[in-house]
Image (cartoon, rainbow over all chains, first blue to last red):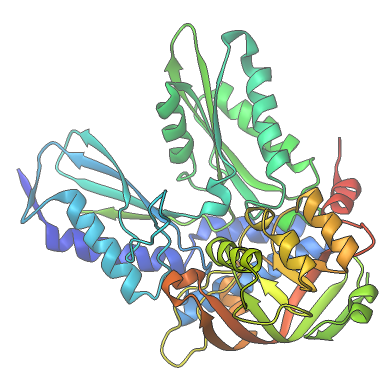
Length: 279
Length: 184
């Protein structure tokens, strides 16, 4: 049995909240640079320059790269040989969020759905807990902005709709979203499972390194075809027209019921923020 | 598509010169308001009560900034999605605002009100909040402090970069961009 203290979890979550909001991964920066080279629109290329400059300022001055510092979503993989000591795991994550958002001068964006009263400390986080074999506690922390989350949808297609139906749903979603989710976007597509499983794997798809390819050849083919079609829409950086609407399409697949074909589209803005904590 | 430097408050004469696609550098004052502040402003107008600032000639920026670090006027401050304000915007346009800054397409009702009352819709780069904060020289909460990030702030901006999306002649930069770059 391995023990992990809640004090350690709080500290790591606090630091991850801040660093996720100040600095993007190398995969995103490379994706910006590559897309800028290929972008057909001069205004689009200028937007990539602004995004790259923005990242530099955010990192150097420890200022949030986007004012929407997001809803903290945590995917937790808890090893069955790990014991959390000194308190509750979810409470520790929330305490880390509370401290990180205060210390990092990050925006508190969480409120009651009816009264709209702000909770004042960006909690609660959304925590997805999975029990796995082993001696490790892994937390993947992803602050998710609402501009792109609001453009996301789940649908229950008929089995007869098939791959063409899936493509149609994804394309309509991206087309209708236009400039709202801050393109260039990353499109997470969850296919199969149940209503909530499709949404969950669509969100997990957003955590993959940008441009990574699904090991399932059918899913990989769909990723490639959807990316080409989305970038043919002309929406472009910030919706002002151009050849880069999406930086990547990531598809995740799960078996589904013989009567169902659930499909979820979870859109991420270009601020693809996530950090991994391993204890 | 031109490049212009303009100063607030905006007159009908200045607004008439702007065309969709123009690159603008804005100097002067803008007022921030998001969902909750819009709701309160429109309720005040409905009751005929005084507003926290005079609307004619002003620009409203849809933004909820991050808290300012000590010694800085403001934190990260990029645009939020505009369609959530569409239900309130025509009332404010009728009251004389001359510009709105946000991101994403507007409703027919908002676009019609803009044409009728000479108001333009600008956008700036979403997700570039750190960069944009450098163009904001002063920020002061003037109303609804209880709303936190959604309070109304008076911002003084210097060379704040914008694009004109909707002008008063019915042109729309989002539609033009699609026409120019769509491959299917």
